[in-house]
Length: 221
Image 1 (tube, rainbow, N blue to C red):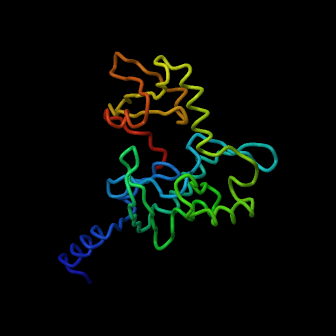
Image 2: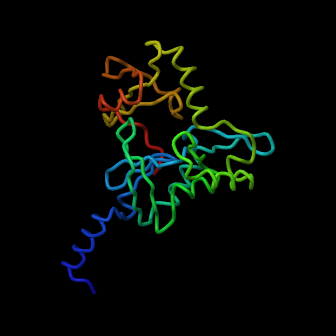
Image 3: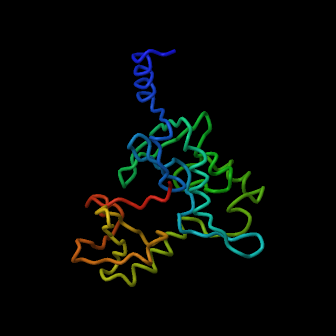
């Protein structure tokens, strides 16, 4: 049996190594997690947005964005997770490769057909994507919109009708007084209303919203 000192020493060792228990992991979306209070955007992949739907083989649609969130939760919640950061992105998040109980989380999201290889930034998961594509797995069961196309289309549509031209991001303050911004591809974007009298406002970019103290919505548990 561990002594109190030994248990404390073990906890400090695990923390220093970047390993975390479930209570320290939170899923933000299909390619972003918080680990020990640090936000990590998974390197080399791009998952469907939380509010995005994808085409099915029979011509219908399915909630691929929500499925990606659930898959990410199954990979990291209740597991030991370690993320190796590469660099920070324009939003101040660490772009990282993450491992959960020895499983490559980035690669598993692509292998399960719930994320694309983000070829614009990395070729690390191209071969994994090609295997999923050949197997018609997940998003590959039918021709469907990529997340970067989905974001671009949503942005163009919302930007043209925003009160401030080209500035469609909604800076909302919820009942808990949390400042949360909703980009046009957010699943709650349409129902979110902005009242400047409450301190709510519009933003022209995610970077601007983050710099002003707003955070993105969280779709995980």
